[in-house]
Image (cartoon, rainbow, N blue to C red):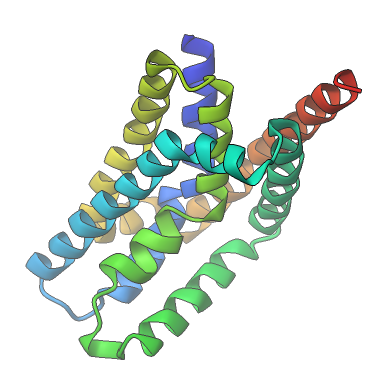
Length: 211
């Protein structure tokens, strides 16, 4: 159980990428008072946590209603995570997320918009990759109360440190520096790539075994 929990936390940590969010968050809240930045960080993280927990609890039933087998979802999810890993390794993910954040902020009204819901909560924290991973974890838990509890623990183990980083975004960014942040992002991309391949292998084995 502990190994499974650590794997879930690692996967979500890589997908949420709190360090990669720092620069985007600083840009979204530039020129705003500290109280406003705290409000945006807390509200955005809480909303993202709610979304991920909701998918963990009800996501499996949703897939069942659609008639989607878990093996097919593992393979599809693994392929999508593999694309995200490629973007992280070649420094494309941060650029894409930054452009999306700016586009959404402009669409929602620029200076007068509230970035806590869009784009901070969705899709920067609770993005497609994190939602996919949470759905996979919930299906692997067979929907048991104990299994879902551990998935929720994994979600909180990632979103709470993310909130802490966002609350101290400026100081953390200055301390780490751009070079170290990019290096860590590429390292996490390699880890995510390996996890994505494992998802695909597991899904393929399960699908072939059912034939």
